[in-house]
Amino acid sequence: MKRLATIGIYDFDLDGFLAALRSAEVGLLLDVRQRRGVRGSEYAWANAKRLEAALWDADIAYAHLPQLAPTTELRELQYAEDARAGEGKRSRTHLAPAYVERYTREILDEADLDDVVEVMPNDAATALLCVERDPEACHRSLVADELARSYDLPVVHLKP
Image 1 (cartoon, rainbow, N blue to C red):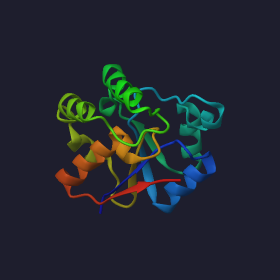
Image 2 (image 1 turned 180 degrees about the vertical axis):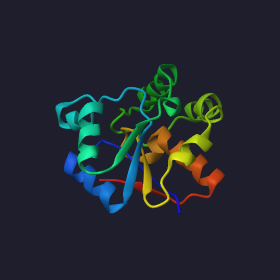
Image 3 (image 1 turned 120 degrees about the horizontal axis):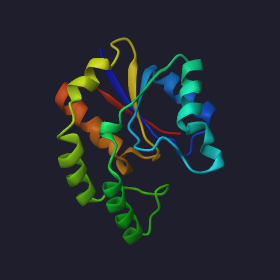
Image 4 (image 1 turned 45 degrees about the horizontal axis):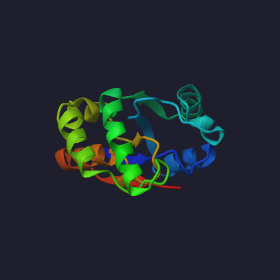
């Protein structure tokens, strides 16, 4: 049975991140970031080449799905809401309603999620990756909700 997880980068170190993936029996990590880099030396492990190498060593497959990443314009919309609410990307607690509506209409509704489900293994979980710690503050939760609803998939959100 196909299973879905979500995971962010913030507040993890590499060992904790890999332990969370192993604990959830993740066999495939789907990166839904537009830019596959993270600022800050404490997150250097999460930059694309290093992350892919660590996942390879952990026997976890990796794929980048830029078609599910928010555009720069959408990210700017969310940053404006963050500024209004006095939150930063690392402390965000929710997504702006305008962001959710536009991400859903412009990205999610246009995506072929059949292709995503097709690559998901039956014998291991698949995890959606982005940077925010909390899924409700990240577009990966919107993708996960749609996959769960449309394909009757169980979802677990992995946190540090």
